[in-house]
Length: 73
Image (cartoon, rainbow, N blue to C red; front, side):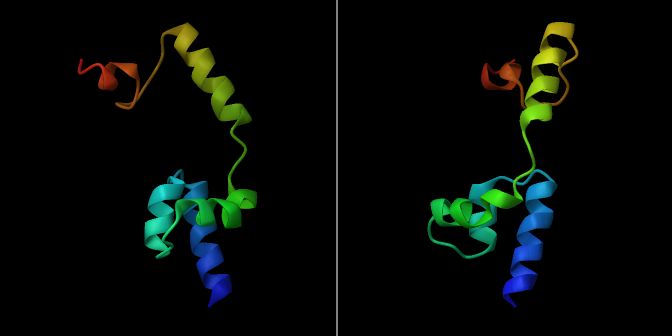
């Protein structure tokens, strides 16, 4: 059963699910517990961070989760 839960967590993290939501799905009372147990499953963010900054300078920011959303535009 533990291996199945671990697989489930790894699939969701790889798909971009956030740790707080994953914590709820796994019935953990503390997202910190989930994060401590699943840190090794998190995909490397280095290339995502680089792409985000590059796209900002290129003016190609896509998606509805950018600064425009936070500003209500």
